[in-house]
Image (cartoon, rainbow, N blue to C red):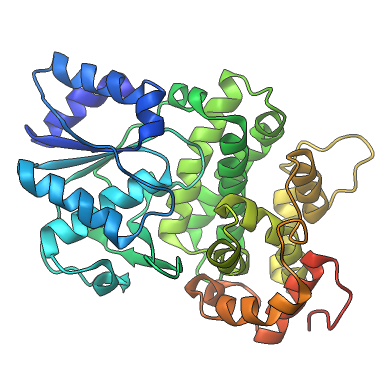
Length: 369
């Protein structure tokens, strides 16, 4: 809980922490709350509150400049995934120099990092439990994943009360992203006993709460389930990987400015249908379906449940977002370049990507092989 912040900062040996956050978190009162806790412990924290959605190398360089000016000794990420990514990215640049593109991939940083403490205010990315910083190219907005074991938070403080300030749309889309994390980690080719344990418990918690998040009726118990579920999904990613739904979502975000959670949600049911051809994967989906709180008479298929949840959230379709069949070829080529797609349980060719995009558009064309 957030009340343990000063204790946690002391545990990490810090006297000069810096909070990395955004103006929305400041406006919600969370920043002042955190600062008051630190001030009461005679800790004066510096603040970088210029985080932007889908942060770029330029954003992380700006954060680094503030950190250097104040000779900080601890980074505190306060907010959603963008705040966590900016804090982690700043850590790469502050301790190892260069540009974020130098760290594209995993394990390319040679020098020690500053300790990182994560305080998520959304229930979605699970970035508080991951060693990757996601960085958008300053011009193309294509995302790079920059990972290193040293980037993982030393402490993550999970306080579901901090998620009360989320606007409904943010709660919906971050929650749907967390749901996708639980499902994609459950079936990816790098799944293992540790990730399986986290994926399944994450899905159980999120499935129990997601409908109330989507319709805005979420209570304290559901809020707690979502917050822990999102973190466990982050742990599942850290110990395995994602799949084709994320590979197909990133080009939609880069080219059509579709919010990440929205893009992943649109692709996920179609990827589930594609993956079911693999009997072992189908068995996993069947097991997870037993954790869904079904309505009487509802078709007990994962993709049907997902589509009902997404419809309740009022998600715009790909067509409504301006995507046309003529865009499919370019989107598919971009999806084929995404690292996460290589971990999909069923190999996805360029033709397959085209077929899945076409299915999502409602176009009866080549289909998927």
